[in-house]
Image 1 (cartoon, one colour):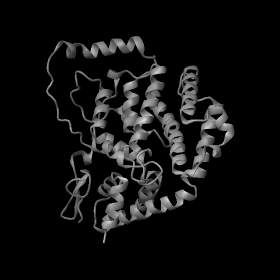
Image 2 (cartoon, one colour):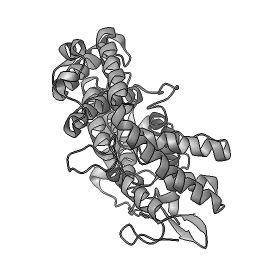
Image 3 (cartoon, helix red, strand yellow):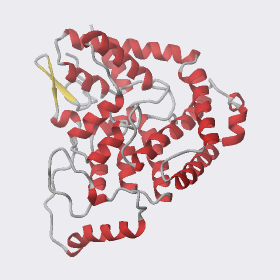
Image 4 (cartoon, helix red, strand yellow):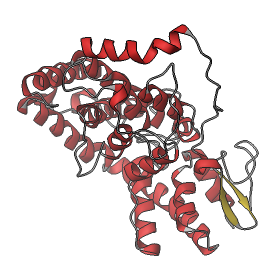
Length: 355
C-alpha cells in the first residue's frame, strides 16, 4: 500500500496506519490530543478558581445561560482541571486534536484552489466561532461553551465540502446500507475526545432536524450559515464565477453591499431579536433575506455550472478510494473514519496511487 512520507508514517496524516492490509486507528481514531495529563499543583489561584468562576457567572451571565460547572458531564468520568472550566478544557482538546488541524487542508467550495486567500474548513470554523462568541457575549450567554461548539462543529467533515459529503454518503449507502452525515461524524470525534454533553449536543445539532438543547448551541447553528453564505460569496467573486452586481439586489439593499456589512446586519438582528424573544431568533424580514441569499448561492455557486465539474471530481475521487478500501475488506467504521478525515490534496494524491 502506498505511503505518504509528507503526511507521516502509514496511510496518511496520522489518522491511521495501514498495517497488514488493515486500517489500524491511532489512539482515539486520530482524535487524540497531543497534551498528556499534567499533574495538578496546589496553589492559591487553583484553590479558588472554580468558586471565582461560579461567582462571576452568577453576576454576569443571563439566567438562560449554561453555567460552566453545571455541565451534565462526560461519557467517561474524569478529574477536572483546576485552572480551566469544563468547556475551556473541551476547547483545548479540540484545538490540539488531529481532526481540527486537518481542517486547514479541507476547502469549502473550490477543490484545492490555486490561491492563498480562499477559505478552508478551518478558516470557516474560526470565522463562525468568532461571530458566535460576539453574539453570546452580547446576550450574556456562555462564551466558552459557544467557542467549544464552534471549533468542533465541522471536525468530521470529509474532503471536498458538501460534494464530498454527498459522495461518501452515497457510496456508504450503496455498499453497506448506511448513511453519512458530517455532524454525526463530528459527534463521534467529540465522544472520543470525551467532551461534555453540552458541547457534544451542540456539535451534533449544528445542522439537521434536531434543535440544540442550549441557547449557546442555537447560536452556532444560525451563525454557521451567516459565516459560510458571506465568505462563500467572497470566494466566488475571487474565483470569477460571480460579480457583486449579480447578487439579488433586494436582499443586498437590506443586508448590506459587502460581506462585513451583511454580517454586521445579521448579527445585530440576531442579538436584538433573541433578546426580545428570550430565545435565539432572527426577525422574519432579515431571516428570510438570509435564506434568499442562501438559495441564490445554491443556484449560482454550490449547484451552478462551475460546481458540476468540481462535484464530479469529488465524487470520482471519494468513490475510487471508498471502493478500493471496501474491496480490501476493511471495516466499515474504519473506512468512514479514514476517508472523512482526509484533506482535499491527500485524497487526490491517494486516489491517483490506486492501481
